[in-house]
Length: 402
Image 1 (cartoon, rainbow, N blue to C red):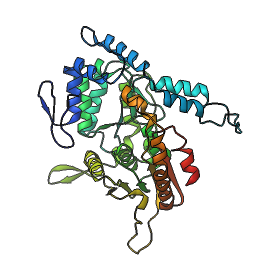
Image 2 (cartoon, helix red, strand yellow):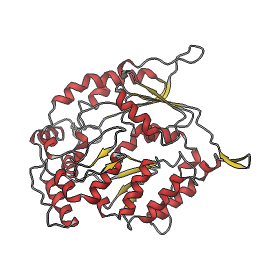
Image 3 (cartoon, rainbow, N blue to C red):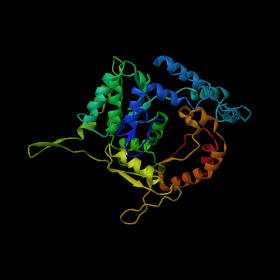
């Protein structure tokens, strides 16, 4: 890979020696100026040869698709083939005892062999409508090709690139990179955005993210805490264009603008905001990952955020001023897992490394993290347990034991 530099250190392209202030800018440079070398590296881990020289962008895309369709892992396919078999007793809904039906597993396996599209979430509740962030987003949505971006109906403010960014104009790619740099939007997959929505977070809630890093869900919950109840409506415009949908969403979110008001102060205009009354505790035992989360949070409103570097199994009890224990209204327990539900992001070499051993090793840790989450929530509160795995050892078995 033609990348060097991590964290806050500038990243350098090893192909042309150009230096960039962030990895986002570096990746945009690789896709725009060194696409052949970049694609060749991306598929060097697979067993299928993907030619890059002499092919246009469309042909390379077809070759990339063919390479992914050839990915396989006999152990994984055999294990989940057993899990999806109908050998178990049927439940009340007539389903088998497995975690899915054979047809569902076949569909999932076919989906794993397709590339994962780019998705990004807009922090629409963290800045006013007349801000630089909003103006940059308006320019982005107006510049992308027609039907290049699709809104996710079930997840407000989340968009998916229906057309790969390599087919976007250079200006559109630069606008997307700039929007990420200033915190107007964050890269976040669709499934990663679901847990925070299911928690039903309100601005007055005390929320705990027990395993927060790298922070996509934490930043989403932080944005939700700045949302007002009236900001939840989302309707498409009549013309159906993505730019019109985005503008219509801005209109439906005008309540957030009402929280900003101008005061006369020495002849200048100042901006104020009504902050959430709740708190959001982001906990993670890895200090370097937690530091990365706090750096990312600087790009948006973060008044309720409290960072904690504790082992989630022994997360300390917080107390109020008078000594009473602080219980949380909502707890997100997104535990470490084997991650076999993220196969769409992995190369052929990583596919072949899959074993059941990692799930067996992590099971005990996951149980203890969930048990601590259940202890931290108040009566009538809500705990959401999530993993990036399909394995019942890391999901159903953990919930049953905790």
